[in-house]
Image (cartoon, rainbow, N blue to C red; front, side, top):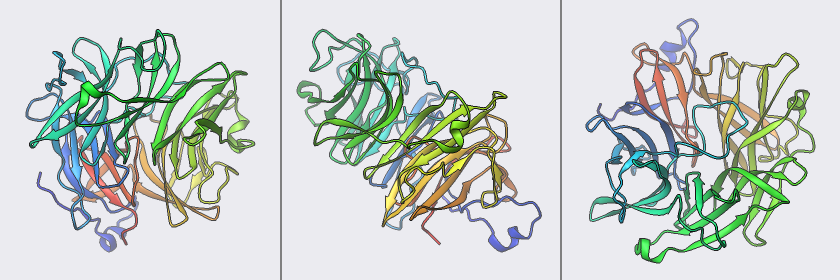
Length: 424
């Protein structure tokens, strides 16, 4: 499919009865078997996702780059699973870990924190090799060809820790200063967040730094969100209380950042929080519990944009006229971005009781005031009568006003698209 910009036919389509309106999508290409939705670079100049290469029929990582006019290129395959990391004899089975010691307590969602990331021509990702061994890796282009290098593999000695080896990984994030920051669990069940300095010398000159290591007072790290060289994570105290924390690289401490109370969500028990997203010293995250009837109630909290966690800015069970939706299952997977004092949070929501039908939405928060709008939603007509069935985003879903996403149409067609929420 040639690159083209598909514009909703504003006035004419608005005359159609029952039409569900979202944002204007720039359709970049068709896709097949999208397993990890698009995640955008911190600088907003590229994005990456995992799908099936139509030529080789193998899992592959696809990349798209921003052009001078602000649009994005047709995604191309960086490499597929047949590529072998330098120094290893095994190729890849799949571009995510196939197992994990830590199992999330939250309901299943179409995406998670194992997205590959890209920044300034460097790709970082987690993967499972064909022999079942997990690892974290980075890729760089040399003489026009991608090469993949291992950062750490299951069974490798954990740098800086006595008598411990790597056992499980979350995907690394690549930062603007070429640090791959990743969460891992060691064979002694300790959670550690490492920073690895990516460099051209690769395997002979590995440079690891422990950013934070779990202990009895604070442990069970679950998922990290990285931006501007630091991270946020969910962790559990020695007393069994789950909180959200921001890592301060100056003091090397995790700083607790949570509401005094959880409003709407604390009407149910037990309360579970997860899905952190960090930007400029602020966080957003989802929380959920179950009501007396056992139905899930969920919401997304933030202290960005002057909101100060007062109440979830969006939650299930409420009719939102501006979204033409009532979220009957979950609101989840938030990504926070802050610009000119305004907080933008892209998130996913399930407007029906189906776990397979979800849309992408946006919150703009200024001085504590929240404006909600749809981005790509079930029932939205995009062109020639084609309708969106479901839309999803990756771990990092908004930067510089751009939201990349994967869309499945009602006829089964999969598309990769972007939305510019600042373009009028």
